[in-house]
Length: 133
Image (tube, rainbow, N blue to C red; front, side, top):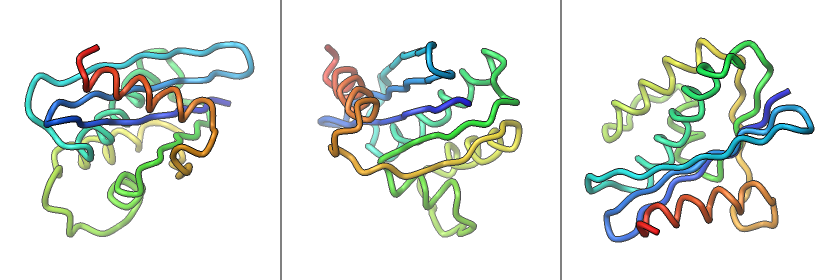
């Protein structure tokens, strides 16, 4: 069983994203990044998901039952919904949708700033990257 926690952040047009991958009970992989281009929070949320799926595949966990937790309703709606009316961020939405076909992954929403240790950690990491710290 693999659990992934993702978050994205945008501060004054600068963006950061972060992921924590929890494998079983004893392996935790955390990493984050930023973009040099002006961006939005929604793009960073989607980027975090895309990077998480890429890392999962790179590490060979693509056949493991995985739950990806995000506090972004936007991600849940665009990636898991069947609606096509979102005109912005179609490049990232399409990439995440395409790649999720190759992994055993379920997306679940988690309430932000509600005491979930991993959600709080990815929030902190993404904000740090967006602030260039």
